[in-house]
Image 1 (cartoon, rainbow, N blue to C red):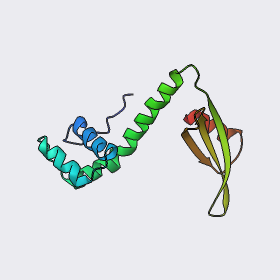
Image 2 (tube, rainbow, N blue to C red):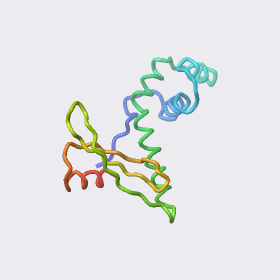
Image 3 (cartoon, rainbow, N blue to C red):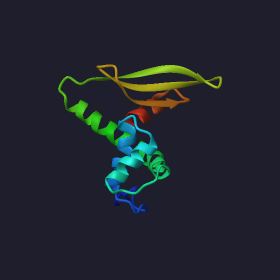
Length: 128
């Protein structure tokens, strides 16, 4: 089964959408500034369109960047990670926050569950 492209219903090319979202996220620019930069490059997109693209594709791009970052970390010979568990109370109910932390204390994955058992731990490890 082939994976469908998230850009399949958009008339604008994926490269332009990626450029607009990355300009907005990477640099301290407003949506209207990104609109002006794209207009100077001959791309006509409104600030509302850029906001829609950001809300739709931002998490997708962030997950892709995080996945590449983790792969680069795993390629290092001295890379280690640890599983950390913290009890948190959300609306008066005890939950368990599982975090994967590398040797530089960077949290690269987290998972919240209501149960503290083997199944919850395995779900987190499979998610990674």
